Image (cartoon, rainbow, N blue to C red; front, side):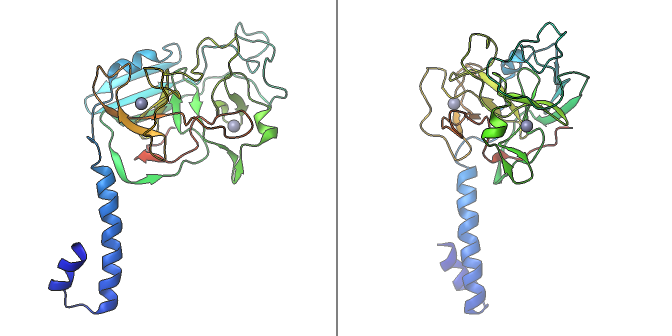
Length: 263
Ligand SMILES: [Zn+2]
Ligand SMILES: [Zn+2]
């Protein structure tokens, strides 16, 4: 219909008309996606009760939420210094990347308290793309420029799905189902963290135990969670697909909102 209307009122030639017409239809699709749900629903604040307050400080400032973390997890790992109380022998990792958890690595993310889906999605880059409930940054499915997670890298993950890198300890994949794992989401509905665009990331399942069936290409949908008091809001789930062997990436997809930097 847009094309027809345009034709009636346009004095432009046929070629210009064709270009404008195809652009129009693309924009229309994007707009439809954006309007598909209720944009700008407030992120349920009770979700922030799940964060490890030994590492994370949450500040609410009207329209914005700021998440500060020192990046230090509240669970055991072979990546702690051997003298640290949370150090354990590896239970999953068969190799380890250099370095140990430690130091005080401050990361800050500020997001809208009512994030909206953007007109177009955004690919994630190297470095932190979200902050987990433990305070550890969430990374995507790459380990360097054009280097996707591969077997050799997966072998360095501890049961938390993390390893150490030049910028510190970080998660790439879902945790492992081992008795040592008492904190992290594994094939459940737990809150995993908050992504750089302000949308929350949950485990693979809904709060009723089912796997969501209406997820978009980013693993997101409008729905209720254990934090939203019956109100539907947009959130992500860990996509319930093996990424490599038996590992499941935490977030190997594009962000649907507008990401802010995690610095
Ligand atoms: Zn890594
Ligand atoms: Zn959901």
